[in-house]
Amino acid sequence: MITEQYSTVGSTTIKSALYNFITGSLKITFSSGAMYEYSNVPSEIYDDFCKAESQGKFLNEKIKGTYNYSKIENNDK
Image 1: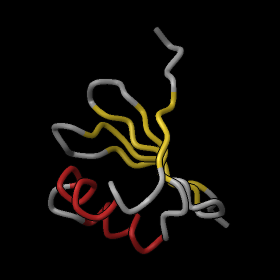
Image 2: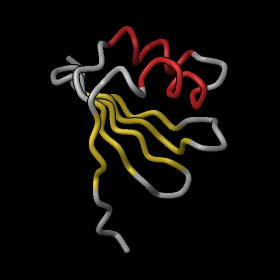
Image 3: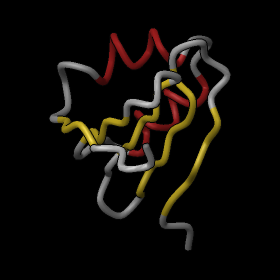
């Protein structure tokens, strides 16, 4: 059983996404290096995000403002 799925994203603003099927957490890494984790995202929303013509637009319209999030500090500096 797959518990996590990593996706590189063909977006100018989003670099990658990591989805955890057990917890419903969606970690987004932006091109700027900023990382955010969205909580309790249903797998159907993640699937739609991956299939979207524009992942940045989908994130802004369907995920931001709907699901709680927190910024993940990047210590790789």
